[in-house]
Length: 285
Image (cartoon, rainbow, N blue to C red):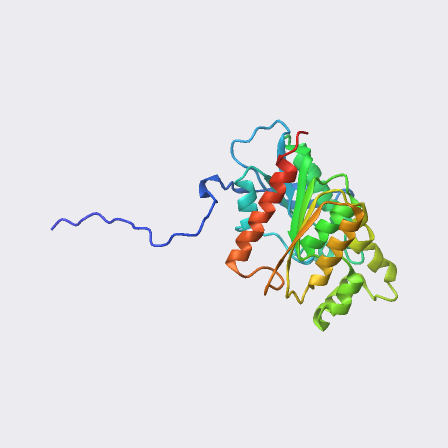
């Protein structure tokens, strides 16, 4: 008796919306030297069929933590950006896990110092590839990545053309007042005692530098975030509005630290793409 050939049938259909899976480039592991010679590991996503003529937009994506790590796994923000022509880089800067204890502790009492320079040199790496216009580089991240975004546009204002920060820290003093006891101890392990090390807290808080920002900033924040309270985002908006910097904010009801509802995840990505399209792609330089 002759058997019928087996046929495969698709059982599931992912909600891809405007994302074409055929246009998502694979990640590439790269290494570059930072300001002090430290070798930084990063993942780069290079969109297909882009010209190496220095005309493309790029985005730096700092991770959360700071004791975190960008892994070689699916990243919905990267997928959305890279599939739309943005060259993306996600560096594992000093303070990241997975590279030894000394590297993990290399930013203690220096948050937004050496680790920020590692992000800056990631942007430099993008422009030196020959694909990215140095005047079309943005930065976006959440939590500590949001903090790093705020530090970047405040301390190195001339480098960034646009920024999107999500639930990031603006002031370590106000964070200490509102966060839970476990996070308070974690913060002290990174920054020291808020009385004895007051200058460290001041030097490592974006509120000290944010008035110098030039890049248009989009702030995305959950209303019920107990890890990085809404008050942090409101401080950012208030300071930048008074300084005359382009800033917009969107607050998600019933969301905490990170957005758990699918519709809010999609909305945050949509707003991020629209912001970068407006301020990175729609420029003549």
